[in-house]
Length: 349
Image 1 (cartoon, rainbow, N blue to C red):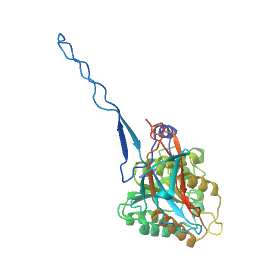
Image 2: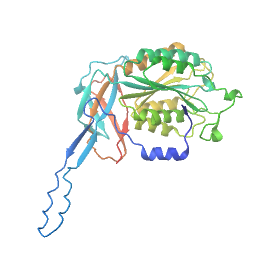
Image 3: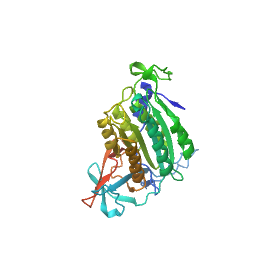
Image 4: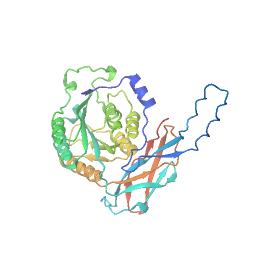
């Protein structure tokens, strides 16, 4: 399967019609409240030949989706804090405190991962280390019912492995990644979307948008995108905000392994883009300076994915208006910092 950049009409349709609320928890995903049923219809007059059709007796229902927030807690020494209880947390939506309806310390919900590998020319010196560490990470972090996919991106976007539990399939996909030869005079195979003036660039934003909008959006549970890149986009049709919004609508989190040390490869920059993506989705940016630091970065992500709290609440604002709702999580302990997503998009009528 091959992913190419989006046509303008598809992009407009996607932004207009695609809205997702917080994912359903292992508990009750929705709740309904019944309105008073309408009164029975007036009986027909004796002289009428045909009886009037009865009015509907079905009560009206209003559904409210349970919003899940996955939280990682660390102390001042950056160690994982695993002894927090529900009373230690307060959660707010648009500044209004919400009542916690679901809390779980040991998260056993399946993880759905999207691994995005930059294969543009700037990654030439690091692609081997990326392949080795990414393969080890998936073997160590994935458990039964977890799924992952592998996408590479340069002047185009390729889905090398769709969602699967098979780490052997995923490792083979990772090993197939190769540096684009476009900059060195290679031939670009045109896709179904015109390349325009940006042909030959790095399609970072398009890759993240497609991973979230086309792949993660229909998945349930915990969802994370891990990007290995210098985070410099030079060819996307879409914007940075489009990529961020697609991830927010999919209830995903973006973690960035920022390969930005000129001693590790020739290039640099993109720190602001990485910070924007991670901050707005509740992820983390980890600077990578060597193969050893790349291994440590994957270890940090693995630890967080297996050490999260999940907090669920029914929002007091039950309008299905498709608007973005800001989320804030507070902890009673002053020496503890939390990592959680900053908001979600409400369902749309």
